Length: 141
Image (cartoon, rainbow, N blue to C red):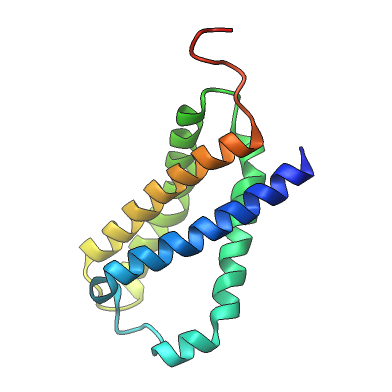
């Protein structure tokens, strides 16, 4: 495992995570707001926890890439990664949140899960390029 590439991919994924989440939740703020959410003023005070959580997820995402990739092409690796990690992390979690957390409609949770599964696919492709895990090119050389 190349430590420099691990650190670099962690930082890149963290920045992408923050920017994509801010954009998504900014666009769908009304749909994603739930009654169990903390008031914005409290959320702002807890931003260090949010950023630490996103950074930790970025590190684990980058670290696990080596364990789950097998040297296929970058698009295939990103797609496989999206299906494995994105679905594993978000779909069950958001179904549980729908049943236990608040009165947000099911479609909001499913849209949220779909966004993160797609987001993880993008992250997987980016990490594949950064980590250079591609062995086979399209010409077979």
